[in-house]
Length: 392
Image (tube, rainbow, N blue to C red; front, top):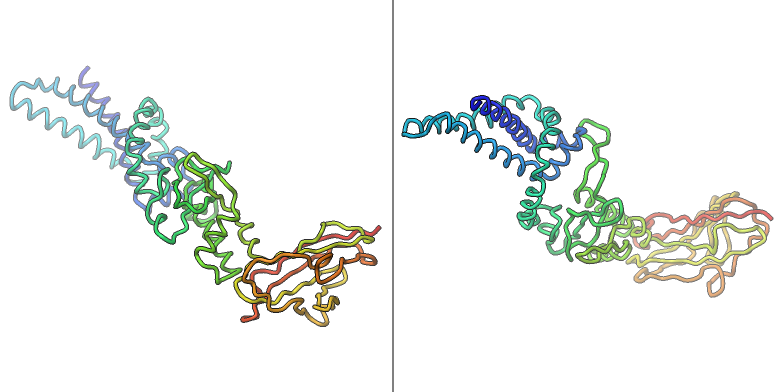
C-alpha cells in the first residue's frame, strides 16, 4: 500500500506543480498581456488579478503532499543508519525534483494557459477548504501590498502621493469605492474602474477588466478636454474643477468626489439659457447667459439657427442674416477673469424680451461662441441650446 500511496501523492504533486509552473510562466509580462487580452477565462482572470489567491493555497497543498510523501518514504527506507538516511534524502529530493519541477515543466511548456484552463477547476475545489487561512494570510501581508501596488485597498503610494499629482482611485458600477481601490487625502477624484471592456491584442474588444489603470485614463481624457477649452488652466485649477464638478461619494475612510466629465467641461463653456424648451408662436421668451472665467479677454458671438437660416445678433439688437453679412460680435473684450451671469433678453438685460409672434414653427438653436481677442480662435466649442416653437 505504501508504494501506491507514494505514487498517488506523486500524481497529486505533478498536478499542483503543473499549475504552479504554468501560472509562473504566465506571470511573465508578455504572456500575461496575451492572457489578459485574449479572452481569458473568469477563473484564470481572478487569479491573475490577485496571484496570492492561487500561490498561497498552492504552496500549502504542495507542502502537505511533500511532507506526507516524506513520511511514507521514511517508512520504506527503514531509517536506522547512515545508509538508510542517505537513501531517504535522495529519494525525497528525487520526488520533489521530478514531481514538482521536471514533469510539470514538460507538461506546460507548449501552452501554459491551456493547461491552466484544464487544471484550475479541480484546483479551485481543492483550495476551497483553505480559503479562511488564505484570507487570513493575505490580510497579514496587506500593508506591504498597499505600499507596492496601486490597487491594494489601502493608503496611496508613489507616484500618486507625489506633490502636484492628481491622484485617481476607482468606483464600481454602483458608484461606490472598489474594495481594492486606494484611499486617503491624496485621492483627488474617482472614476469607473470595474467591469471595463478593453481591446484585445489581436484586434477587437472584449475581456472585462478591473483596476485604477482604467480609471486614470478617463480622468486624463477629461483633463485633455479641459485644456482644449482653456490651455491656460493651471494644475490647481484643473484639480479644483474636477473636484468641484464631481459627485460626492462617502466611504468609511472619508468623502471623495467621483468624476463627472461632462459637467467639468461644461463648467468652462459659455451658455445661453432660454426660459423654456418649447414655446407657442404667440408667446415670448427670455434668455439668460452664463460665462465662465476664461482667463483672457474674448469677444462673444450670439446667433440663432432658424428654419429659414442662421441669424447673428448685433450689439444694436438687430438680427443680421449670417449667410450674407457673416457673424459679428455682440459684446467685445469680455475680460474673462471671473464667472459672470445675467439676463441677455428680458428684464434687467441689454435687450427686451423676445416676442415670437410671426415666427414659423420649427426648431431654433441658440449658439454662443467665445473668441479669443489675442488669437482670434474660438475658445472651446460653439455651445448649442435648442428650443422649439409651435404654431397656435
